[in-house]
Amino acid sequence: MKKIITASLVVLATAGGFLLNNQAVEAHSRGYYHFRPYGYYPYFGRPINSCYPATQWLVDEDPAYHPQAYADGYRQGKQSATRGNNYKPRTAGGEFSRGFDDGYNGKKFAGQKQVVPNEYKPYTTSECGWY
Image 1 (cartoon, rainbow, N blue to C red):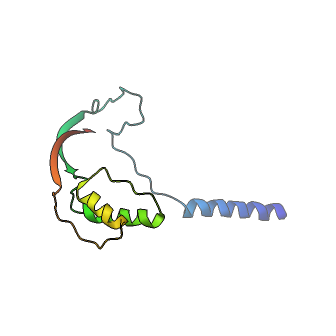
Image 2: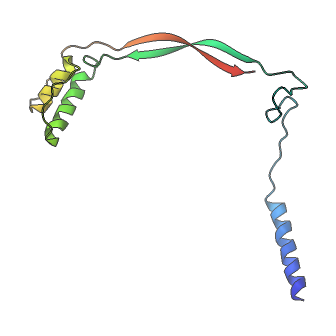
């Protein structure tokens, strides 16, 4: 009697698992051969690798005179002073260096005097894909 009860519980659990946990199956089209060996494309031939030019934009930011240079230098100078680091002159120069000096020496925030806007330079690259 125990064997019959155990067997029926196993059968019910297995059948319930098959009935409740089924997943939809989707077949690929006839041209889907990613898992075939290289060179085996009997229906549509080999896929084509195609490249085309694409324009990208490069942002050229002057480290000494970009629009936030003074504020960045002031913040870094203030942090350097509070950490107790020794003073080192900044190599970037310009507004960044002036802001660093003001921040390190505890002067009032004066704001940026000279701004050189960022330059956006286009450059062409190629993007490729399989078709």
